Picture (cartoon, rainbow, N blue to C red):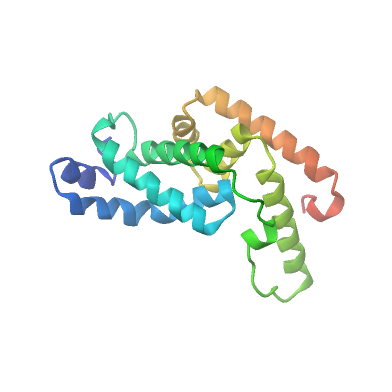
Length: 185
């Protein structure tokens, strides 16, 4: 893909310029850490998993076939690494409020309700089965296109659409039980 902003750095790394990988890390570090955090809910663990994913990406860069955007490959690699690591370590449960430390509550009743609504939605997403949670995280929270998210999850777009539809239904069912606090405005 000629319009892929990562291609110059990837080419330089493959030609032996190790320093060029720093540009890739700088560009994608925050999104990869955020992806890992949404899966494990522990900042330190998320940072460790992201770092490990970048090491894997560096070591496996020659295996990237260039069939899609580099970021799609990187997110698929990171997602698979995080899933694998979480299956092995089973981190202790973290209180959702700790994971999303909101600091001092903002002023105004409306903002407090919005915060509570966001907390409830985050909790509901975190409780989805892995296949649906991953689809929601990539598509809605990371903002990946259907094509990118499907590639990252290594499923056809139709499967991703079905998972998103099913996840929305599951979330709607869970959130409807909570009443007007999470109802649409």
